[in-house]
Image (tube, rainbow, N blue to C red; front, side):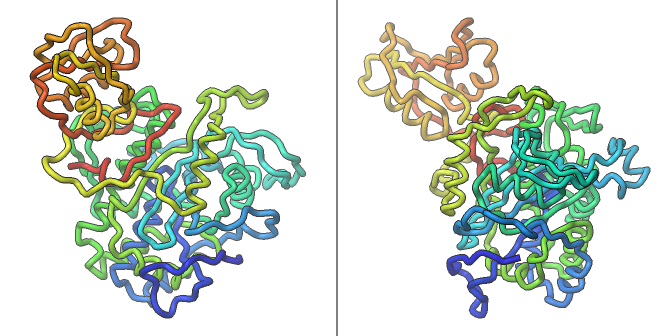
Length: 491
């Protein structure tokens, strides 16, 4: 497949051909899996694993040509775009695994997880954008993989494109929806995911509330847990631990993937050549990849990303306009917000980061709270006679991530001593997160206040304490925030 040219990378090896783009590896059946391949293999290569070892592993990769005969493709942008898809691969699961990890059912021959991984041209950043599997899509004209029937353009859920036309139709559909040129295709299944996590020695995740899902068998108490491969698969597959369904699951997958990156890059596992070989074998043993995904490109990518860390990665979900978009013959689908999605993919095409720049952390560590400040709307009022206090509070809350109105007002009472957080009882978790950012403040219910919280600053106000979300799983909504890996890993 022809590979698009890319601008020279800062850490590009001297003999590297400017026309060659390193591909990444394919993804796992759920969010975690997909980037497992990308990041794990990258750090494996950067750890110094020998060319001969990788070549022998490379020979075992199942190849696919998703780009054959594709025409009228989007123009190439900067950086590299990898389409990572996850299939269940239940035919490879043992009976013991089926029983233990609730992996029953017949293979669906569809993609459970679909995501785009954008590697920046300078190899300093990986941006992961999740595409909900139930996204409303219109597939291009094609021949059905199973029946051989010719199909014209028609509506479909995005994950069904794989069943109708395999990797090729999946790539064509994603390119049509995003107007991004896909450079490489990677496909991972359950088995590869579990093996990789086990070989790495497990991955640490933490949760502030119990997570229990009878469908997957997940049962975690609040706290920190070291998950092996099977339990990790339950964690990234679970959709019924809260009301957020598939969107909440994707956010848990982001959190797990960040933890996986941290494990692979900071544990010393990759300094052991034998462990590197084992991890590479686990990752590469059950994948399907395009023809351009080879040993040389893998080594180049790994060398260029030696300093990669959780902070180097950013995660988001495509902006959503309607979570229950009804389509005749399909039922409920997920409709993207066209304007916001277009802006997001234009940013990727231009090779720009999605997350705003931020300085390195200074001062006390941020307090972990059970809600995302970026999703909490706040109106600040000055309850004192001190001029400018409302602006100080508003600025401080905005700096730590809260969605303040940026228009603080004066409260009717100018004799307030203790800062108050007024909230509707239905929004108690956001209220507690806001109160944590205002040491000494009083939580006071205000039925009918609605989603927007109110802060009345008192004379006791001294500072706004930095906070960050402990768990993204309950934060799903139509407008997904952008988080970096270091913001969602365990402290």
